[in-house]
Image (tube, rainbow, N blue to C red; front, side, top):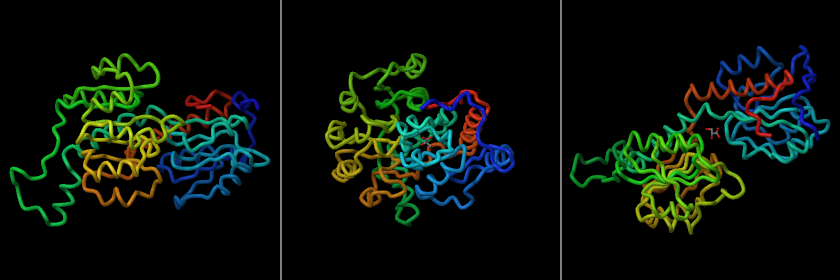
Amino acid sequence: MASNVGEPNVNRGAAGRPRVFVVRTLPSPIEAALRERYDVELNATDETYPTDRLIDAARHFDAIVPTVVDDVPADVFAAQPLRTRIIANYGVGFDRIDLSAARANGVVVTNTPGVLTEDTADLAMMLILAAARRASEGERQLRAGQWLGWRPTHMLGTRVNGATLGIVGFGRIGAAVARRAHRGFGMRVLFVNPSAPDPVAVADARAEQSASLDELLGACDVVSLHAPAREGTRGMIDARRLELMRPGAILVNAARGDLVDESALADALERGTLGAAGLDVFEREPAVSPRLLALNNVILLPHLGSATTASRVAMGKRVLANLEALFQGLPPPDRVI
Ligand code: DGY
């Protein structure tokens, strides 16, 4: 089916304005802007909607604004009659949207790239440091009243300065982590990327390309994942690949939980073959494996990569820009399909 871009005559709501359905509570300046421009249904309680609610929205709204954690399956695009013309995703990752069903039904999909890069890179760097220096474990010990005072052998961690960091996925965020690690923390940076990386970013971090993921894993003290979840990357860090990592190495994941086989990761952390891990994302969010929860050598955060006011407002502004363009019959700036 033909794309909707270039066709400004959208259906109008009661006030003659396009109808927009928002799946989660958004930062208040963004909700205010949406209210001003559109006939909008917001989610004041931030509850998780069942798919039926999205199917219903697809019949009655011109746009749906889901987030990176909301499933938008083929059933939503099969709604009859289908009124929705754009899925304006709030976030970069669009792995939960059925893109082929969207394409087949002429629905535009957009995301919010660029605006959360620096904050997400900061968080990945924080996980690298926290895992290497046992920050969570130390805080847990102190809060539990179990700290016996400074001792020469107390809670020794891994030196980051001079260590080798492997970046898996040298896109915007991977490159920003590489820059921090090299320029700020004196790390040597290796990387793998499926396409030619930005040469300026490579030079900035003096990064060296590894021949393969397997080679990179065996050559690094710390490995940080920055790949999207898609066919070919899901489960790519499995038991075999964890075995390739250096003894005592650190794995950081601030990208997508699906990239890592969590049970194989728990095995490696329990055995101590892997030294530590820093995780901001999980296979079945918001559920977290009880085995990981029980371990001391893993720092666990609740998907906070882009969680600053600046990033979350900027992400909302990208959503507004994408909606605005589509409703004016222009190509949305962050079109995915
Ligand atoms: C994204 O935008 O994909 C991030 O995971 C949100 O933090």
